[in-house]
Image 1 (tube, rainbow, N blue to C red):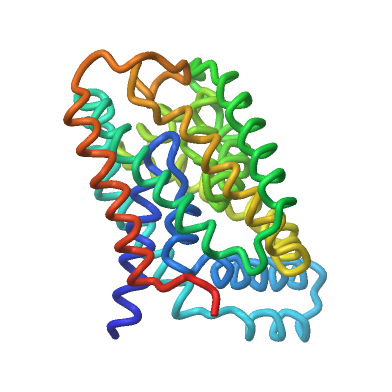
Image 2 (cartoon, helix red, strand yellow; image 1 turned 90 degrees about the vertical axis):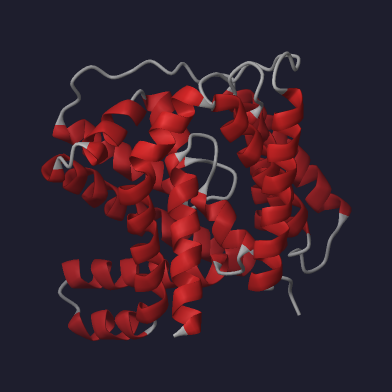
Amino acid sequence: MIAALKTFLVGFLMGSADVVPGVSGGTIALVAGIYERLVSSIRAGSSALASLIRANMKDVRTHLSRVEWGFLLMVLAGIFAAVLSLAHFIEVQLEERPILLASAFFGLVLGSVVVASRLLHTPRILHAWVALASGIATFLLLGLSSGNTASDPSLLVFFGSGAVAICAMILPGISGSLILVMLGMYQAVLGAVNDREFLTVGVFVVGAVVGLALFSQLLDFALQKWHDIVLAGLIGLMVGSLRILWPWPDGVDGPLLGAPNEDVLIALVAAVVGFVAVLLVARLGDPAPT
């Protein structure tokens, strides 16, 4: 029971992070020590779905037996609980306290970089170069975010947005919410959740399931074959994503960096709190390799 509640809490934290542009639920999963386990279960589930489409029932049963259902369902329950309960609150905080929120998550991601670096089995110079290249590429890519809002998007657009955003949500450092901002769909999706537009949200979720089924196959294979190189790339993603969380000017709505000009002390405190919180979560999750 305690393990299930802990898994639910991690899922809740993942969902809370995914609501905020610039923060990835995958970062929380990595810090809590469940990332590879989560990807493996998702991959097994997607393989079962592919076998079902081919009407190969024997393979369906084989793949389904490899899914950690209790673990996966508790993670998903936590994510959905966070999105449903915190979407409106986060939306308000983004408007009223952008510097405080951006600073807290800046510290969270920075702490995640420290924790993730401990997960490398055999650190090498190559991994540092991979992280550097990934970080620079992410930093530059996030500078291209326009933030234009889509006007009256169709259900097909919601489906496609879900398929693309979910790939980012499972990657540490790349926020699915940020991808929605770049696609101009963030406000539309958040509004659909807050207004309980179940058909629209359902189409978005179906798109996310399809995207996740395809992407998880590639990600799990890469982690199995090139663990440290992939992890180094993910660390770079997290470092580069700090650009969108820089609090001055508003680090949530704009990617341009600026000099600190207000609320410096409260921003520093919020960042430290976020940083320490990640270290505490990592200590509870004990993700360090043995």
